[in-house]
Length: 461
Ligand SMILES: Cc1cc2nc3c(=O)[nH]c(=O)nc-3n(C[C@H](O)[C@H](O)[C@H](O)COP(=O)(O)OP(=O)(O)OC[C@H]3O[C@@H](n4cnc5c(N)ncnc54)[C@H](O)[C@@H]3O)c2cc1C
Image (cartoon, rainbow, N blue to C red; front, side, top):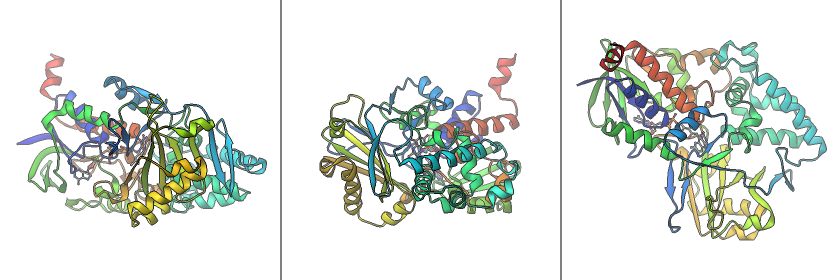
């Protein structure tokens, strides 16, 4: 049987695309490699702590993420504000201090330095053409340098430079030396500016979803029913006549169109017949994923609140540079500290044993919150780089030259093959909101080229 469309990947992007096509009266199936839906969103039980579930993947939603907020509303999911009061902590250059508000206490010179550099960065950010980053004024110049070279040129103080590097790792999960400046600008603009991306209140880390973010994918999948086929990794996409034949480890499926909704580096590992045009292949060769190990240390209660602390900390102490309070909303027991090992630290510690990683994380937590942090009742971690169907996160990044030389191939369909996934989003690229809008865009592309569906014709009569 030939379908109207096949969607590869049951992450939020693929499920959204399928949901939209089904609403348009299309016959769709979704082929998912894993035994679950949700991709980079994953809510897990904490062993030994009955009833406690934590997000090991994407978890926050911000107030300007309208597509995600609409889905949360549609599925009746509530949010919990991340900002629960208390002082945040910062430790850069060996100086530990507490602060409230959005500007970490870094010393006057550093604060001025960071303030001026941030203003310059945000101004440049606003010049990026989100729909066509390669057409941004001076795109060649911006894409011909790294974010690190920009930091070195525009920050006068050592701690100011360090601050930007930490922001880069927290947002891109890679070092500033690996990023094209144009990509750093595009991505920041795509989420409303760098300051917005690193902020809690009003920013990208504004709120969590009560019960976990994976519920969005689970609700979408429930609506799609047996159209979603789990444990069917796609291996080959062959263009045949005007349609496609998609081969999985279990069999073959045919459709008029296919939407590939997986990270670009994984799309580049599929076999295409005929082979992809060289621009598209060059692009997927140049879009590596970042590296993150997300850790949650669980305590019998959020003890740091006794000392007036929020549980949020940022610093240059490896291997954990950013920490948030992940305590569930009922505000008593248990308490959770969410710690991110990112970029080179994540690559380096990926080969260590879980016990070694836990010891290193707890050492950093103890530096901020005291010895109680050394005694969690549970510890949960997930190294996304070792997940065969993700190979790193939070998302992909582009090195110098890629946007201007081959970036136009990111969203451009190749015959009946269309591209979705958060990496293809113009707004909130790399985030769940971007995954949703990318799925909607790809579904609309497909719907527009398919013959009018029976449902649509009925409606028009
Ligand atoms: C630790 C972590 C923290 C994050 N924090 C946040 C956050 O707080 N807020 C936020 O907005 N975003 C966050 N993100 C990013 C967010 O989770 C992603 O942007 C989003 O989930 C991506 O959705 P997607 O559908 O584009 O891709 P994915 O979720 O990667 O979905 C792709 C799907 O395709 C499947 N697949 C892969 N290869 C194949 C194949 N060959 N055949 C069939 N199926 C295949 C995969 O199994 C997966 O289910 C975070 C991500 C991680 C990992």
